[in-house]
Image (cartoon, rainbow, N blue to C red; front, side, top):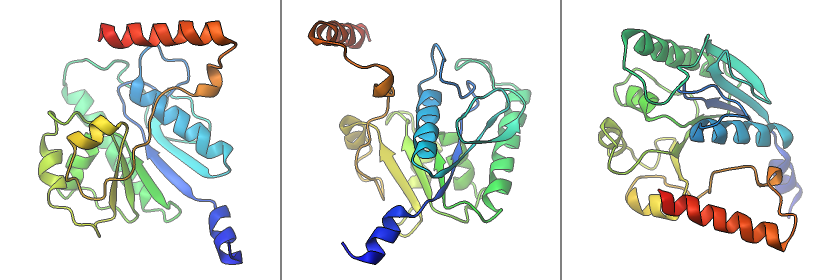
Length: 211
């Protein structure tokens, strides 16, 4: 490895991660799959020495820098679509755009298709590359599918599937990266012995079969 390669490897980046508004970003949510992923990525980036900025609601708890876009999250996943919620989403996206244009962000990381639809409609123009984690079910793509089909490999938009199954479901999507499995922070759930491992595995199988 050359000297230049080492310098490049050690380069610290600034990531603006755009949170969802369904739930606050927090380590102790009873149910919040995307929010848990955002929390763990933020913590991981920060611990690696990168600058992690999370655009989120004011009731969130993050490890890196918190950029508050709205006062409170919606507090639940399934709720009525109201003018107030749409206003909050619009404000959230608008403030994200303003923050992205300050010039100190290297990458924007998205998790929500709603903001991608704004890109499709031409409201949001990103000054830096965008990475999107694919939480979207293949059968529920909406205008995301229409927009993504117009992309070229030079678009500056990159997609990360969270499973091999999901990657197959999104076959043909431009700039699809390798699978990165998202979930719990395994360091917080260590195996204490062979019996614990067996019990943990049985519980996981039970939960999967219950779905």
